[in-house]
Length: 415
Ligand SMILES: *[C@@H]1O[C@H](CO)[C@@H](O)[C@H](O)[C@H]1NC(C)=O
Ligand SMILES: *[C@@H]1O[C@H](CO)[C@@H](O)[C@H](O)[C@H]1NC(C)=O
Ligand SMILES: *[C@@H]1O[C@H](CO)[C@@H](O)[C@H](O)[C@H]1NC(C)=O
Ligand SMILES: *[C@@H]1O[C@H](CO)[C@@H](O)[C@H](O)[C@H]1NC(C)=O
Image (cartoon, rainbow, N blue to C red; front, side, top):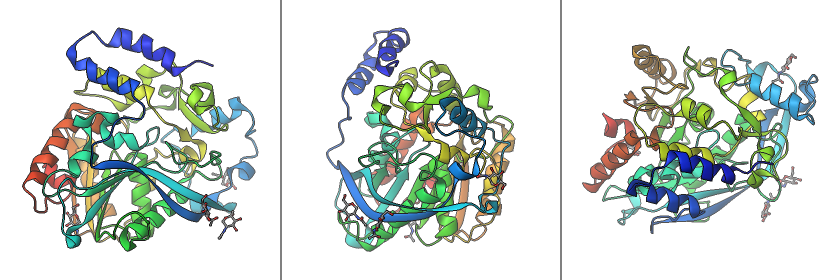
């Protein structure tokens, strides 16, 4: 078993000349978990039994031996091919799963008190292979959008969660990566959470009049499924880095994934079907998720702190990277904001065509939204919140929020 920490020293040795700018990273990597701002704390939200209509992979995929690392890795890799799409509704072998779920997250309250009628919350959902710390700059405050949103007179509550099966949200034994951890199950969890945020049944705080969903990558995709199935759950939807399958989308051979328990002792309890970047795949990950202007230290920290993606998450509709999933018009009537990075190889990266494609998402998918804006962020790859533009954006949110009032959603701050 190769330890990711051993690599840490190798990687840091080469990546980091001893400049002052690196001091923060060293402190951050050596302190686990990262220190939170005084207005933020770790929370657990018990949701009770959640049930969902999943796909029965273990029964329908007869040609896959789910106990064979080789078989399972081969099947998983095939699901990273954006050309592969299967309508999940075509499959007759459905499986109802029911699990008792407790979601872990980081809750920040506004820095300044807000009147009860103005209480809003941003529910923030991470991408595949990340956890809640993605919205907290992996622990580096200047990158933390979750902190920026809570700042100033216009501050909002923020709740960055760990999806079930990720980060700290897994219970005593990890959920089945094929049968349980699929988009329909995640959506039922998010639905239950949104309902509780609105109705004050989360046992933690008060009811929120206004819930804004902020999701990135896989988290944005889940958010779009949520507002398709439950259009009244949230008031605003901010989807960044949505997989839109273009000619730039990475090929499966560019993603070197391995069963998570073989890559890092912290994943040793995870059953076969949880995947993470192979120990040697730092450059692959950086090539796929980074581009434009970023600090290489962050890309190293990103690699070292990565979470997992499961078979059920990658394979549910054939491939989660296929563009076909974004085919139908939603009846969602709130605000929508669609964002991608200029060099985002999952959501964008094909120049002027990308701007058009995002506009197309607004007109085709959100015809009934009260507003739908789209934006292509310059000089950034997929993980924009961990690039320099993430710091700039957090600063824009802070200055807009300092003045109080309602500054709208992220798309209004960016433009
Ligand atoms: C879920 O688990 C919690 C704590 O482990 C327990 O208190 C609760 O009764 C369980 N709920 C159900 C529906 O089983
Ligand atoms: C769906 O059903 C088809 C044909 O019955 C089968 O070949 C395929 O493997 C199934 N797909 C999934 C995701 O279970
Ligand atoms: C919760 O789910 C478990 C597992 O399916 C089941 O055994 C239990 O009866 C359920 N509890 C409730 C209160 O629905
Ligand atoms: C909800 O909050 C967002 C900002 O997060 C704002 O743009 C929107 O107008 C609010 N919606 C309602 C219905 O109050």
